Length: 260
Image (cartoon, rainbow, N blue to C red):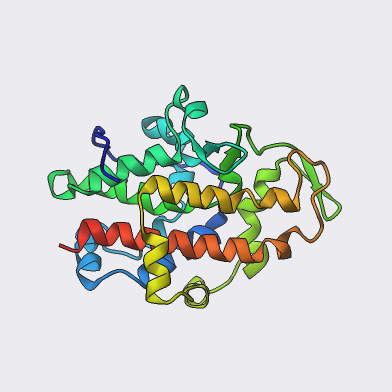
């Protein structure tokens, strides 16, 4: 995961909107991860962010249009081919994608002791958010095509197909769900299974995640106007798996950086 050299990132403040995975989805990814962080990792992270990491679950969404970090707006999604392989080329001219962002945060956090405190915080915010984004079904764009076409779902118009899957954790589990309890429920793999999920490189994770994400088009054809009425329930297993796997991989990464 540390094969590329990137510039250090600074820190910024302010606001915006658009919530990939929604608050429920992103908080659940972090809640799963927190169940697998070592005590040393927790203590070292607390030197920079002395609060529950779930507080910053959607920080990158809220601040993506801030002038100082507007360059991160392309970091939330990525392109793939029809076979489910990650494809960096369609996004390169636009300044990177979610896999690039994760490589960036990975490189920086692998030497976090050399960074300013604000740079550590920024990179932590990036990795806790973008690990979730990489596992969000509509964030993998087949053949580089966006997932923002208008559609109808359960008799109501939606401006973007993308928005359905951004909100699907809330539809499945409820807006007021206890995400820590949900994380406990989703965290159902044995140690050997977790080892397989977190094995390999970041690119391996991207390819595995993409192959999972493309199954939403077995439920709904690409650019279909009418979204299948049973989309939410038919997506339950996929969403549960992706939230869980993102949490495992986030914990694995944070332990690599901070458990030392």
